[in-house]
Amino acid sequence: MPPAKAPASAASAKPAAAAPSAKPAAAAPAATAPAAIPPVKPAAAMPPAAAPSTAPATAPSKKAVLIGCNYPGTSAELMGCINDVHSIYDLLTTCCGFVKEDITVMIDEGSGMQPTGKNIKDALRAMVKAAKDGDELVVHFSGHGTQVPSDDPEEKDAKDEAICPCDMNIIEDDDLREIFKPLHDKGTVKLTLIADCCHSGTLLDHAEIIIDGPKPGGPPPPSFDIAALQGMLASLSGGKEMPAGGPPMKNRALPFNDLCGMLTKMMAQMGGASAGKTATQGNISSSLTSLFGADANKKAIGMADYMGAGKAAFALYQAATSGKTDKASQDKNVGILMSFMQNLCGSGAPPTAGETATSGATPNAAFSGSPAAAAASDGNAPAKPPPAGFKPPQHDRLSDDIGILITGCQDKETSADARPAGGKPHGALTNAIVTVAKQHYATDPGYPLTYRNLVIGVRDMLGKTGFSQNPCLECGQKWADAAFVVTDK
Image (cartoon, rainbow, N blue to C red; front, side, top):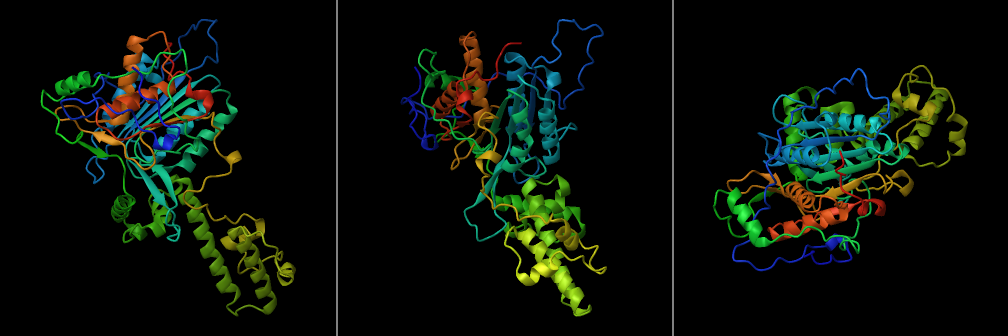
């Protein structure tokens, strides 16, 4: 039977309570053994010499980027993320009509393409650039999520959500917004983002969809018998009973202090000027740019530019007030500085009468080459980046029609890296998605599995197997009852 109707508020929605059973709840069942996957996306095959003339040149395509980070050998090590990539790869290729040439795989083992921050962003940008009207895109991330506080310690509660690549070059929601925004101009492109990590809510700035059951007339979402699930779990664990008190697992949240510790260690290994630096809340942006330069996340680069411009302005101020130039030159340089500082701080305040007389003056030779003077003269001084947690105006956000986000949990919850005794480690969300989808395709092959019903089924399964996390669906109403990753080949 279908699960109980979710509460009106998705932020507090919980799956229906499971019927009592003789044994305690245990970890979610591992999905069917997945097909082997190549560690790196292979080169696309050359088209046949005589392609049929009737084949449309712009036929819709299906492409995917699958990312798994186990962080081996670090304090953040997980166990199930690479297995998740194998499972999703198997689902897409055996049930959903994807071909291996159109799937980019990045996992942090072996010698293939590593899931670094730069590689992930490059792969996503390439997929978006090649997308066209009617295409279906899937992005799956399995690993740690984190929350990054503002560089300003006074902003105690403001934080940005981010995913953690294997090199800790974090990717924030601002970065994803910039990467996916070109899809606005590409017609109807269906982008599915599955984030099997903590702190994955609002990564695309969408309103959360209220999950209140399937539409009338459709089949109910997949339902699971707890006794059957326990039998499957026993077989996966070699017949051993799972320990009481819930499934063995580790959550996929990387605390900010742990992130800072890993960045500090990396800077020490890099050497140079950053060798003795300790990453903290007050210098997280400069720590990231020290390590990753122009490949750091958007907000870190913006803060580095802002701080660098501020230092240049101070240097100009010192030179202008040093007394080493005549009064007229000093007035000119102070005017340049005032103009620069207005641009830098984004104050927009008009200059005073005294400043008006000098703000447009040409700097003398002593300052003509300084970054501050150049920025002041062309009006390009960088503005201070917005604080952590800031969401841009609606017109600057992704449309609700761009992207369908399935999150691992709600904002105040954690996503599980499940480790069943004797079974394969896996992400609770990914395993539930694959299990629900495969069961649906097997029992109702002619009826589409909607995003809404998928998430309802996933919540039902996780609730019955002892996981407290509540995955959410964030997208426009247009997609809530659309088919999840269409299966036609």
